[in-house]
Image (cartoon, rainbow, N blue to C red):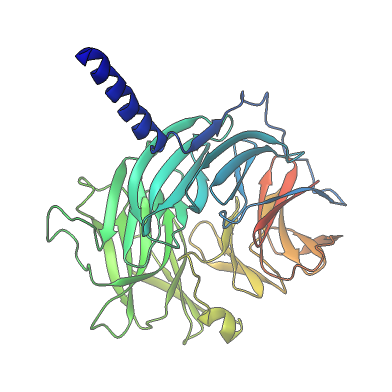
Length: 391
């Protein structure tokens, strides 16, 4: 009799734990991997039309990985067929999403719990199978920045970097529940824009007692994750300086007051300064998520200032050309560069910015900025909280 009572009590307790667990509140609908990834066309089509649209308020840019499109809204992450937009897999939790990004052919879903973005789930982009999970310390408003090898979660007071199995490789800033004191060089600073390249993470620091800002570049994977290692940290003359982009050959910083783009080599030495013919309102604007709008192609990094796009060389980020009246950073596609403009898309030669042709496109009453990506032959536009597939 006693054994039976104990067994029933254990069963009831187990059911209570299960009912309140993360597993109980998680839905995972997986799918077999797609047969193949369609290639991009040899040239940009002369016409493009909306093929599908889906809500995706948790993606700051369209997420395209392994030939799939990943959308995210509320607490739900959905893997979609790029051509039709039809759902192939779905992962959902009873928590709101902070942000969703991608790297390593996987989707990275960051969920909000308590006061921060502390639940990170990694999903195979082809099938939706969960491949890794971790508890993190990312801040509200975080954005994921990848360099192909590591991913960094942005924040105003803390940066976290993870490797492909979501093991933390670096933390920088005001560390929560810090075990060893004294490892963080400037824990009272606040952070501006962040960029990454080739195993390095760059950040603009704004520190108490310093008139200007500083550009700090860190190893993405130091010997100990809680002991950041600086490649360099150099003072900047302006408090509102912003890190535009990084490549293996250096970093580019914009100085809004001087209206200049300043290039630094990999050791932190200033190389060149370029005057910027850009509206002051563009230069003064501060991104909410710590990342300036850029897109990478084989030849250029494309920086969207807010009213125009500047092509920067992938070798050292020196400016090559500028196109005016754009609405986003655009995307490298079919050997060309495609950028959103009012009423459609401009197809440009990436070598010199020459307009090859324009494509008319009806976006209804949407007038905001547009982020783009490509999934095989399908072009994707993020218009606010919606992702649109174009064919």
